[in-house]
Length: 76
Image 1 (cartoon, rainbow, N blue to C red):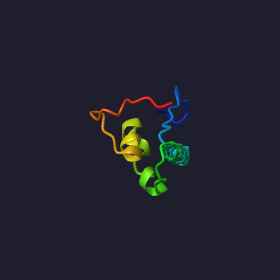
Image 2: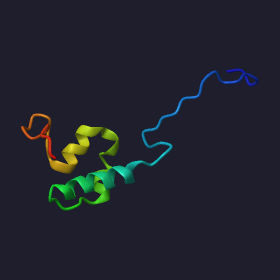
Image 3: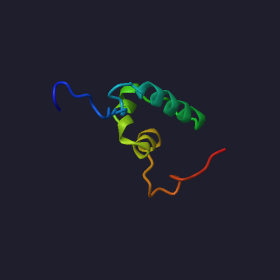
């Protein structure tokens, strides 16, 4: 880009680079664990998987893989 040119676009990477969303995920996952009668997990344990998507959060929080029969279980 030329020194006097204006950018034509600005891109943002919101996977935790600009905003730390890990505390929100940690709180939510531990609330879900509590609803299922499970003890909370240490924040550092959850934080390592936050940016790896929903499957990773289910794996960390409940030890379930997509092949497990309870993986898609609905709880009310």
